[in-house]
Image 1 (cartoon, rainbow, N blue to C red):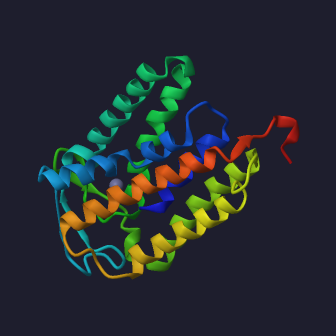
Image 2 (cartoon, protein in one colour; image 1 turned 90 degrees about the horizontal axis):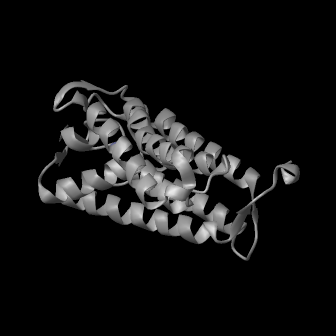
Image 3 (cartoon, rainbow, N blue to C red; image 1 turned 120 degrees about the vertical axis):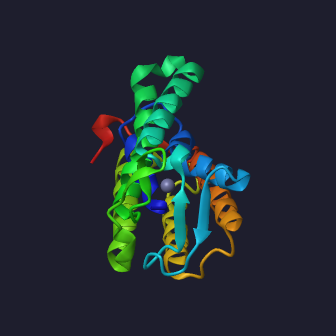
Length: 224
Ligand SMILES: [Zn+2]
């Protein structure tokens, strides 16, 4: 999954918590951020095999540290602890929410990946394989993303220029990126796939940082 991962981060922000939106954007992609770095370092492995699924050409044959169930749990706990250390004033519930955001990545990946997600180490691989159903997988990404975006829009309001149309443009960029990933040409190499992912996740976190400055939470009474 790619843009759909941002659904839970936007939904979490709609639940009114002090966690910056850009932190939630990094959190929901944290496993992929480390995956990209580990692929670049040669610690985890992927090869480009067009046709391995109907929409995604990545043969993710070795990623025990970032995408095993055990690994995902450990990263989630570590992220929650790290958030608590840096933002103690936000309380334990915010730290727990950051951990849950990190873990949401594995759950959504499990829906779409072919069985390449190990339960631990490199063994007992699972994945429902929705990537093999292009229309359905695409709709799922969009549905998860836009549900989160809808909740975020409903619970925040525009406070300066760009806070309204910024969200719409952001949605369109996300749609275009997802369509390119599913229906565009495959990445030229494993390292290219990792760099593309890192650049995209950084750019999206940057947009989230910008967007949050243009919008403010609505009070309960103001909510329609
Ligand atoms: Zn992933």
